[in-house]
Length: 267
Image (cartoon, rainbow, N blue to C red):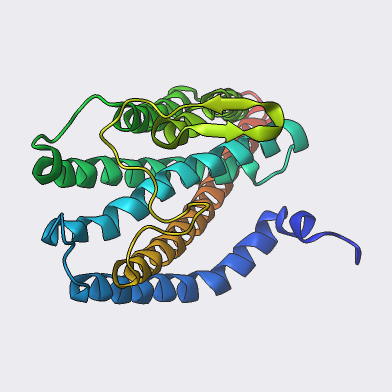
């Protein structure tokens, strides 16, 4: 129908495959070019007056941490779309986003440890931010393991969706752990927890607390890695749709073979 919304149109897997097939090569090329440009700008940026050359880890660590959390938000929103709106591509989106988000979360943990060694004198401390991000990584692994352990597709989708929505509570805890939370109109104030991790230097109410020579490469890197995330997510969704189509064809072939065997006259 002419008055169909964009969401309804994209709910058609065939239409999604056609549109994503046209977008994906361009999106991938732009993402790779932006990441290369960002890393070049990060390499050319001056060293930090306190952290020296180790500040360059920031251009990979910070976008990875952001995307680890964003990936889980996509999983949770897709799970909500499956359970509430029965969107036909919601489960495809959730399943495709989980391993990508897990990979970025693991990258954030690894680069954070490498950054922590020269800054804190150790690769790991069990403070609130690091522990909550580690729990996010384990939550990703739990979603992937739960889905792979259940053979029935619809049941696996529903159970992982429920777990994803329950686990979304980890996201505000990750932010509150360092920056606290204040909601004046509710009279709510949650102080930041005891942590070595520095608070946000970019998204602040009083403006970024980082010099432009380091801020711009960081933003370029965040944009490049975000585009890469969406390209990988789109590719993952395409692969999952193709896998389900192949599975449906195999099931149909088995059903036809059984029907033909049942209809054949007994010897």
